[in-house]
Length: 399
Ligand code: GLY
Image (cartoon, rainbow, N blue to C red; front, side, top):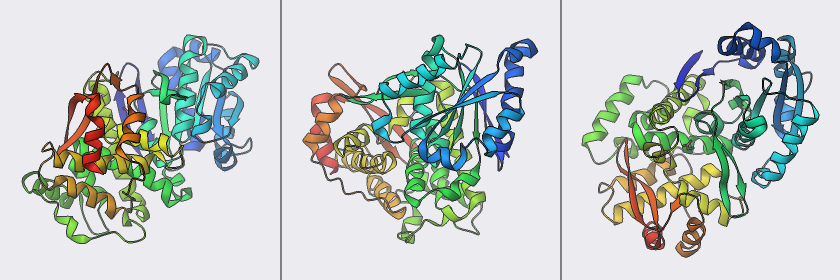
């Protein structure tokens, strides 16, 4: 078991443990009793498990481990199942979820549980943030992306017709529970979706995460640390000599190494969130590759997944930054080589003007300036404020 304590406006634990779904009821009860005392916990009777149709079949059935565990711990459990996908991450789904809560007489002391990927976590967290002006919720991520990124840090929200995540709230969970066994049910595309966020964390703040992601059996933590040290003085990552990983990155088949890597990525995010929970400064670094990535997702009508778009967006900004002298010479190419090693398709099918046009509507544009995240050198990214009108030219430099 690995437990990471997040000390944000609400303190909570992220618990990574095989079989944790069977303990969810007890863990939630214990957490509530720590927060509210015995009297408070007696009032908390209801849990609504929010999940999508695919995950409902896998882990959210009435006879399955999670719901049995919640019932055994004394909760009355209802389910809200919605169709998955970005098309349903919207205000209509939020409206239906809030109606479900009122129909089932949820009070301020009851809870929501988000069981699923990033979309489910964002929708559930947003509903929790606004129902009765805020109720508690627990994140149970079932994708790699949700485990390493969206379930931690309290960003919740939905898309509006004008763009992604344009309505939302910062609302921290009470607890995050991740069972690494779910990784075995994920397709390689879903694993790559999450790996893009792990690599992002490494590019932002800690190149040992990149080395850990590239680890093959026999490598040790010391090898990773040594590699990182070498990279901070040498312009090129030595592992680039390894060439592409082949059809499947080796780390996907090494559960122990994957678990350590996931914990490392969560810990990088934890440190950033603790410093700047409401994204007034340093947390913006977590948007590396996302301004262009969100534009790619929108241009593709969400046919290109979030992780694939973030990988493409990161490569575009890395190459553009290198061409504009903002990224250490050669490092932009290294980033692209690392992404290609994992098998990401870095060919962006959209022209710079189309991406820039979509990005103008992104909430991250304030006035006529936009903050870009520039991966300056290994394990270090910086924020760069540029005129929004320059965005098309900048993107064009990276295509
Ligand atoms: N996914 C970026 C953040 O949580 O800030």
